[in-house]
Structures are given as structure tokens and as C-alpha cells.
Amino acid sequence: MNYFKKGLAKIEAINNSRSSKRFANNPIFIEGKRKNKIERSKPTSRTEVLNFLLSQFNRETSYLEIGVRNPADNHIHINANIKYSVDPGVKAIDNPAHFGIPSDEFFAKLRNREILSNNLKFDVVFVDGLHLADQVDRDIINSLEFIKEDGFIVLHDCNPPSIWHAREDYHYWDTPAEEAWNGSTWKAFLKWRGNASVQSCCIDSDWGVGVLSKKYSIGKSIDPVNPFYEYNDLDKNRQVYLNLVEYYDFKRLIEEQFSTTTK
Image (cartoon, rainbow, N blue to C red):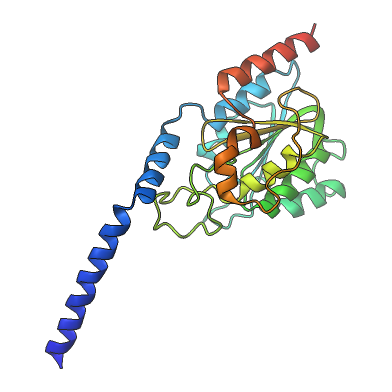
């Protein structure tokens, strides 16, 4: 019996090895790993984008970050006079956020004047919390209520380079994306690309840095597209759907408009 069990285990190990090799040598898998590597090499970080936007305001600035986990990744590097952070602390042993609650609860308390100042508005709100479309959409709706008229909402993870990066389950790492996870943030961003109340674009770096503005001309809205939010459709049309721009073009666009409004 022991010989029989050992034989079955050996056969299973051989089959698993063959299956792993076929998967690793699959052209789609290889292309996914290539895209993962390219995205990691793009130079402009979300921190650089956020600090650039904040630097345009000729006044004391206020900044809110939704989703922190490790402040050293971004929050402590942000140059703003007033900074707050929100994170329920699901992935942190010691929650470093100013408000250790879900963002929905934070905005409800802010709206009901239970926390902070009842007239507080932010220059920039950075959304990098739960990377699922429904939550991101609510974060955008709430943020629009609490940004200044010339403020910005910035979203991380709007341009997933492969369908594995756009998976809904963060914990599944056996893909070319490995631990990288953009989730379905892109769906919420695409939804707002079709909303005429805001202008929007996505900087083609750091997994896609989406920017929304109520005032500045950074990208006109588009007619609603991809109604079922299919990833392959996004992949074929991401330039138009996301309004992908290079960072230096975005900087020039913003600087020109700020120089006009401050004269």
C-alpha cells in the first residue's frame, strides 16, 4: 500500500510540474509578466503628482488621504499645511491613520459636524482605499462634496496593465501580477469619465493616476461606454476611455491654467 501511495504522489508531482511549466510558458502569461515589469519601471509616482497639484495653490493647503496602511509609502511625503488620513486599519497592526474608520463613516461624521471643522474643504483628496469599484465610486461622490471648487480628486490604480492586475480578489497572487493589485478602480473612474460635471484624465504612470476636477480643463467627459465594464474592451480602448496622458503634458496643462487664474 505504501508503494502504491508513493507511486500516486510521484505521478501527481510530475503532472503538477508539467502543468506549471505549460502555464509559465503560455504567451498570455509571459505578456502579463512583461506588462507588470513595464508598469513598475514607470518613473512618476503618485506622490509626485499630489505634491505638484498642491504646489499650485497660492494659499495654505489641505489634503485628505483615503487608504494609508503605511504612511511612509506616500502620506508623510505630502507637502500640505493641513493633512488628514482615513483608514479602517484592516491591514495594519497599529493603525497609523488620523481616523481609524471606514471612509463612508468618516464622511458621514464630517457631514454631521461630528469631527473636524464644519466648513472644512480640501484642496486635494487622494483615494487609495479599497480597490473595488463600488467603494471607489462612493469615495468619489463623497469627496466631491468636500473639495474646494478648484480642488482635485486623485485616484490610484486606474490603469491596470493586465486582467490579473484588475482581479477583484487581492489575495490571489498566482498570476503574472503577483502581489500587485489595482482591483476594479478603473470601473469607477470610467464611470466618472462619462459624467459631464467633471473633467478627467489619467496619468500614465504608477498604475494609472486618475485626476478629477470640477474647474480645470484636463479632459472633457465622454459618452458612456463599455456598459458592462469588460476588461478586454478597456484594454483595446484605454487611451480614449481613460484619457491617458503623459505626466509632463499634464503638468504643462495645469501650469498654464493656474498661471492664467492667478494673474
